[in-house]
Image 1 (cartoon, rainbow, N blue to C red):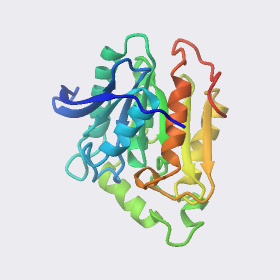
Image 2 (image 1 turned 135 degrees about the vertical axis):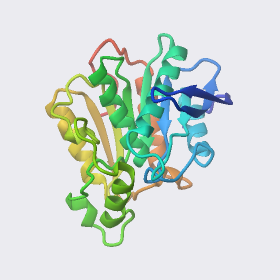
Image 3 (image 1 turned 30 degrees about the horizontal axis):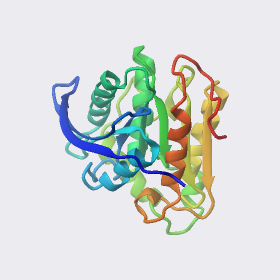
Amino acid sequence: MNTNVKTDTTVTTVPTADGSRVPLLVHRPQHPKGWLVWAHGGSWQAGSTTAWAPVTATLAAQSGWAVVSVDYRLAPAHKFPAAIFDMLAALDYAETQARDTPVAVGGDSAGGTIAAITALTRRNTGGRVPLQVLAYPPLDPDCTRHSYHAVPGAFPTAADMTAAWRLWLGEEPTGSPVTPLQADSLAGLTPAAMVVGGDDPVRDDVTAYADRLDSDGVASSLRVLPGVAHADVLRPRGRVLPELVTALTHFSTYDQTASSMEGIPR
């Protein structure tokens, strides 16, 4: 059973590399075990830090980590990579606060996609590469894998997801991956903990990412929860959120100068 710790919640804004400013909702325990930069779900076009506050507050209270929830810019008004700039700015902020504690990026659904791309971007630019804590991120813009059609009528449908990808990406950028599955190599990333439901249409995207990480020598953990659907973190008594708390608890002792996954549940 998790014992909640007291957290203080504040709002701040930080500048982004493309000249904008991004609002952050920060849940901070008195002595954080680490810092998690979180992107909410919503198909890249909906959601907010306020709507997701019960989720992020619970993550902070049950894990002992500070959680920086990012009010990233939404599609269709703001297409890729605006949300990545916002996430990178929030990551910079978290790193100034973290001192010698671990730093991770995470998110649920579309937010998990944003978090994964943020980690890859950091690797590509030579910065400190954050850990990843991901809940059911969609990672295939074409939505071609079997799980998208395995459970008839399951949310999100392949048609809904491909439409959401198009709204976010617009004319797909060239020269940079829009998902880590498009990267030539994932070597150099730090460990990732991933959770997805067995009945979630994006399940096979997540398992494909875990397989790619493994083949490229990056430690990862993957939990596939039987009978669990998409958007589970928003459900009362959902099963995904406790798994995220467990991953953060284990990451609390992670040395980001090492590449070991020691102590992370497999």
